[in-house]
Image (cartoon, rainbow, N blue to C red; front, side, top):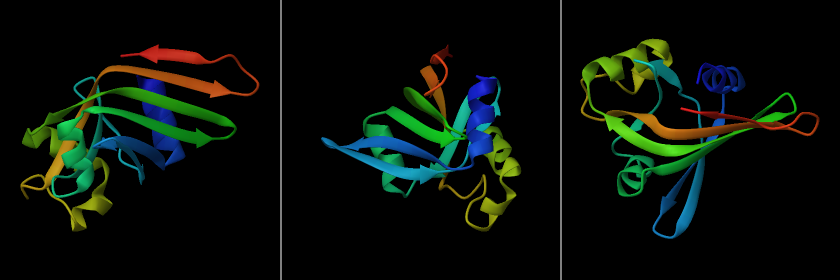
Length: 130
């Protein structure tokens, strides 16, 4: 999981795919955190992303950097604990102008039953499960 975190953190922007009804929705994201040995992302409860995840928590992330790409799929689980939200926001202080752990809007999710595949055109794929 650490290797997945390091890749996402270093690339800065990754793309999160959710489902809205029967249509895929993909958007850029940038938050990633490890808290209590779980990989987390963050969004706002008022955003369509949050609503889509609550209806169908199966998501996929895709990121590309330095000729390598990462695909990460799994189920997202909402963690409404203040400590989890605070940990995320402490690692992204620039988000504190829009979010805080007590605002009723900040939402963090962690991956459950995740499978990540690191690929390139020059190396065999590497699969990581967590």
